[in-house]
Each structure stands twice: as C-alpha cells, then as structure tokens.
Image (cartoon, rainbow, N blue to C red; front, side):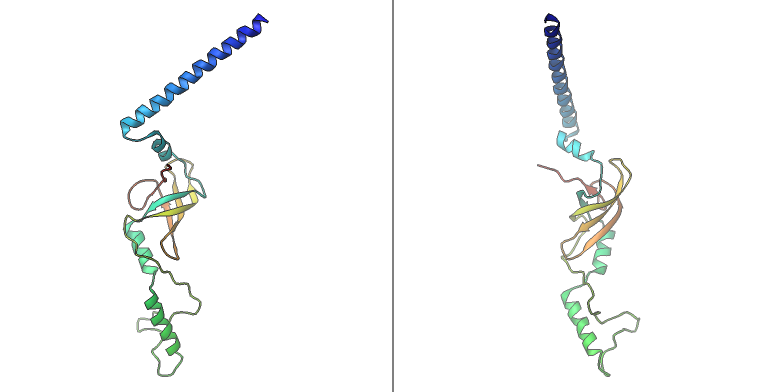
Amino acid sequence: MAHWKEIAEKEYQLAQTLGKMVGELKAEVERLAAQEGTTMKEKQMSEQIPSIGRIVHYRLSAQDVGEITRRRTTGKSIAERLKWGVVGRHNDAIPAHSEDGSVRAWPAGAQAHIGNEVHEGDVFPMLIVRIWGSAATSAVNGQVFLDGNDVYWATSRIVGDQPGTFSWPVRS
C-alpha cells in the first residue's frame, strides 16, 4: 500500500510542477507580446492559417476600386438605357448601338451591379474560397462582400494591413 501512496505523491508533485511551468510560459508569452505592443490574443490572431470558409477583413486597393466602379451602374443610367431599348423598336428610334459599337440599350434580364461608392482603403468582409499553401502567410482567393448587390473576386491576396491585403478580425 505504501508503494501506491508514493506513486500518487510523485504524480501530484509532477502535476504541480507542470501547472507552474505552463503558468510561467503563459506569463513569458504575454511579456514578449507586451514588448511588441500587442496582446497575446492579437499575437495568436496574426498567426492564424487561412482556410476555406473563413471570413476575414479585406482592404480595397486603388486597382480594386477601379474594377468595381467600372462595372457598376446607376439607376438613372439603367432607366435611360431601358428607354433606348423601347425606343429602338421604331424606325426613327435612336440606334441601340452607338458609333463606337457599344450597346446603349439595357438587355432584358441583365444583372445590374449597383452599390454605394467604394474608395481605396475601405474594408469589407471577404469569404476565403481558395488557399495557396498551408502557412500563415499563404495567399488566398476570396469573395469580397461589397455594400451593394455585387461581390468582388479578390485573387492571390496575402495577410497584411495595406490596401489589397486581408487581416483577421479581432475577437472581443
């Protein structure tokens, strides 16, 4: 019986030692994070590995803004082009194509991309749909959910804090 008591006492001492070591390690990580000006939680968030289905924060670049703005239209523009389509059915109508060959009439059933203005640096949620690697720094493709009825496909984007990059949302 004394033998089992001795083993139990050693197990208890080992558990106490391990608990103390874990506490010391946690305190050291927090001390190092404080030196860098970050919290332990922010440190853990920055080292996350991207995976399909995760939602991150995407910061628009100037090129993104140009692509989004180019394909968007306004309600007024759609109304004018719908009129051209209706007027275009008559012999004396405005031609449906302009002199440069572009279509002026709004095609029946066409999807309009409408939304609020976007600017470089604006941040929107992005759903990761493809990852290019298995490291925290791996590039991703994602669908950026804009403030409108459209999304933007951002390809080969990396984690960062500059326009054209994504960041992990800070959890509170």
